[in-house]
Length: 430
Ligand code: S3P
Image 1 (cartoon, rainbow, N blue to C red):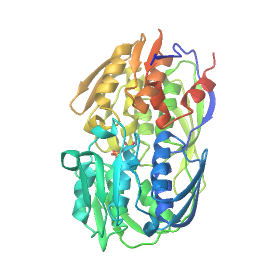
Image 2 (cartoon, protein in one colour):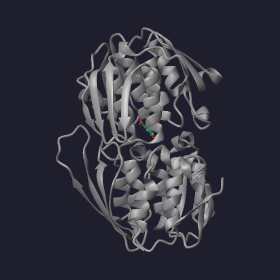
Image 3 (cartoon, rainbow, N blue to C red):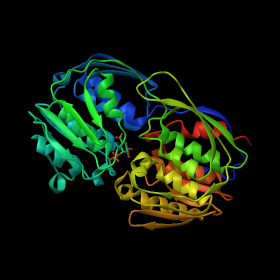
């Protein structure tokens, strides 16, 4: 396909946009709605390809789901209402769909087969299949359960105590779904706290879960009841415009309805450390997930160090933080982020290679990257490599590049943000 020409050398951004629904919360709303009893009504659902894959999979399990734009209605009949799928379950590009679904399917008394795209076929799955086998689940895949296609023969599960070797909300959530179906209690211990949308949603659906720091306990055999869910905007999508507002000259933009769950707001701490000029107006709506509006202006940035417990709170934002760092005075060091190697692409390599192509001074390390700023981005031909977040980061990089930027595999962006270019265009003031 011919690479798309992106808007470069943008003179300013102004105005406001409403950030589309959170991807993690949208997936979970369909999953919980499908295993609960009764009707669940979801508003501000993200109709991105990943979340549509989750809907398609649960429809194949016999759940009635209506979706029109960002409104979704799910008629759940409880865990026992799920039926053996007649065909394969295709998760597309979505790691969240496949990993969380395994936790649900592990306890269902039937056979299912999970596949995804080329990127999913390379992503590690034993981080989920190994602990699920401790519950008594039977899951097989290529290379001893590491890769898709995965075949799950579900059945009775027994609760376990499991210390996670990697900080992963996807693994934690899969084990919580298994724990909800297992006999006795399940105890999960995280090495570092990760996003807690699953825990919040168990409570929202009338279940019980106890979280004490990094230890989470859940009892099996609970009945969940359908509810109403309003999905806040995705801070991981807002991050591209937070960066754009800070680095495009003459800019002031407001991002409406941004989810502000503290397990996701690492990007705001980094912006603060780097000296960005922004303000937050939180909403007082008593919702399960906090949200607010953020206004950001063109800023004078300085380099920083990003490491340790902050990493899981901004793991998906590292590509755009790397771009921010190219426009900050001094050095930015990102450490403890080996997990980037097993995302939709190896994001250490894709970020370093694509930003270098545009003229950035950036080097890969074993567990992250080092960026030297402030650098002049000249332009060039780059690729998303099929990774939505790399594509969006490059579109913002184009906005501050002096010369032309051409992007290959632009279509990947619709995985999490189908209206991304409409939003970007609406903010360009020249
Ligand atoms: C997600 C958790 C994160 C994140 C992914 C979504 C989730 O992955 O990178 O985009 O919804 O639980 P890990 O938990 O594997 O780090």
